[in-house]
Length: 268
Image (cartoon, rainbow, N blue to C red; front, side, top):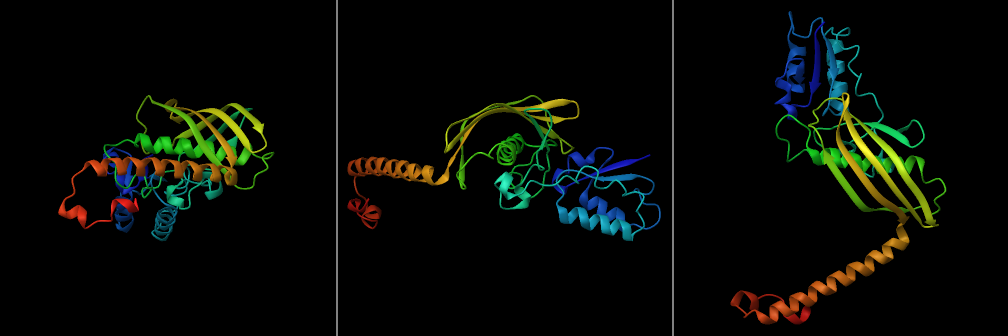
């Protein structure tokens, strides 16, 4: 039995492999009457396809008489996408993970769900593999989502802010636009005071039987209002330092005609 995995057009190099097809090639095949390459095969939606593309291709397949070929179409893409409240992303296309699930004590998993129009894939997609920064962002979303869903029941502040203290990443193999899973293991969680939760965790991106990326992270969750006041103070201090540096540099630089037309130094 033949199998075709359909990936987004952006993965055109990967789509040259046997058993892989780009989305545009799929649509063309569905329009072909007679002996289509799809007849008698199983077609599965792969990475990079958005919900609209997945639904459009399925409706088109059913209308063209390919119900048997598409009976496993959603095998890899039926996981629920993590929402804004978990992944901290306003646009669905920028969410990279499914809703995390809890397994044994301290272990949580989610599926990697790529959208070809994700913010990290629009301007840097080379070769056949998934870029490392995409996997790193997926891990970042994973620790946000796991913490939001499972670890803040006793945390009082309604509006909270995540602060990343430390992140170490290693890449051990290429990841390709195929199914992948993120495994999150909680190492330590403590609440030293009512407005602060501190977390240490490790994550791995698995594809097939092997991890391809590992991440170690330390972060804390804080009261957004309290942190906002501190952030504003630090921002003002940083700006003041830079303005002072500019004043010193501009006093040492001879004025040109162009500089005379700009704002006077006294306004800095």
